Structures are given as structure tokens and as C-alpha cells.
Amino acid sequence: VELKALCGLAIAVGVSTPVLAQTTASPLKFYWAGQVARGSQANPTSEPIRSTELSLRAGDRLQFYISPANPCYVYFLHSGSNGELETLYPDGGATGKPLTGGSQKYFGWYELDDTRGREMFFLVVSATALTDLERMIEDHRRAGAADRAAAAARVIAEIGRLRAKYQKPETTASRAPVIAGSMRAGTINLAAEAQEMKADTLFALTYVLDHK
Picture (cartoon, helix red, strand yellow):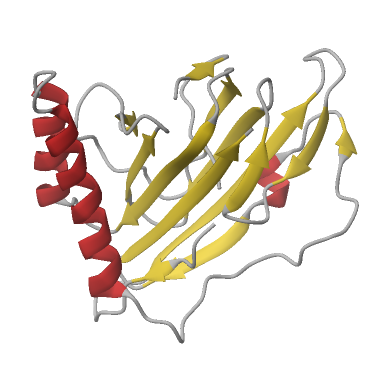
């Protein structure tokens, strides 16, 4: 499924339980928020994303925000309903410089197109570069049409391996309470909404989007 970018770089949506790596390395901490906007761009209504399972429709628009407390590497990927995998960040290749501590970055806006189906978004934030994952992302980027599906499957399997390796069910990220009736006029100041996320070295989150 194609997502239509409205401006700049973007990330996307959705909810699984966060995976928090527990090792002896320096703690990983960053602030994260997202919003869904509906209606016209001139007069939208918006809602903060509080869950990793979302039900959205064509024309809905998404924006995300991250601000690391210390340097970290960010990987964000989208798997469409047709199985096609797209690396949304880092853009321009599988590797990138870490986001610096205290920096702020917005991802979006993204507008959903008319292609319906179940989609997934994978967010991985790590204190160190994930070289195996980067190599698989690069292999997928270079793969020909006949090999892209298998290359995509390897990327998703590696993300699953990282989740399994670092799964700590007793540990959860900081989360804001779900507030009923949270639709607001205009767009949301995500920097003010951002919630603290913590892990020792790696944080992984899978979003699930029911695109109706």
C-alpha cells in the first residue's frame, strides 16, 4: 500500500507491546509522539496516537516526532498490504548518522491513499548501529523484482529476532493515559505531547494499521 507523503520525511502508525532491551550498556531514552489528522488541511481535527493498533481511512494524515535524550539510531519501515517493504528512515540508504541527544525531528505528514488492507510499521531505536539489519535493508534496496519479497522477509525476520532477543515482558515504556474524547481542533504540538521511552540499548515497536 502506498502512503502519500504531504511534506518532508515521515513515519507512520499503529500497536504491539514495546520491546525493551535489557543489558548493561548506557540507558536509551527518547521522547516520542504521534498524531492523526482528519478533515481539510485548512481546518483539521487531530487526535494523539495512544495505541499501536489503528483503524484509519483514506485521506487520514499521520505525523510523528522523536527527540533523543542521548544519541540513537532510528529505523522505521512500512510493510504494505501487498507485502512490499519500504524503508522510511533512514532515507537514502540503509545506514545513517545517529540522531544527536537533544535534537528534535518530525516525520510527516503522510496521507493514506485509497489502497485498503492491513499494514504494519516497524520502529527500532538503538543506542548502537544495527549492522546486520542495515545490511539486510541494503540488500532489499538493491534486490531485483524477483528477489524483493524474499529480501523483505529477511528484514522483517531480523526485526522479529531483535524483538525476541530483547523481550522483557515485565518492563514497559512510559505511556500517557488514554483520554476519552481526545479529538482536538487544529493540529497537536507533538513536542508537548511526547512521552518518555526507556530501554537499556534497544527499543522496538510494531504498529498495526487497519486501512479501511
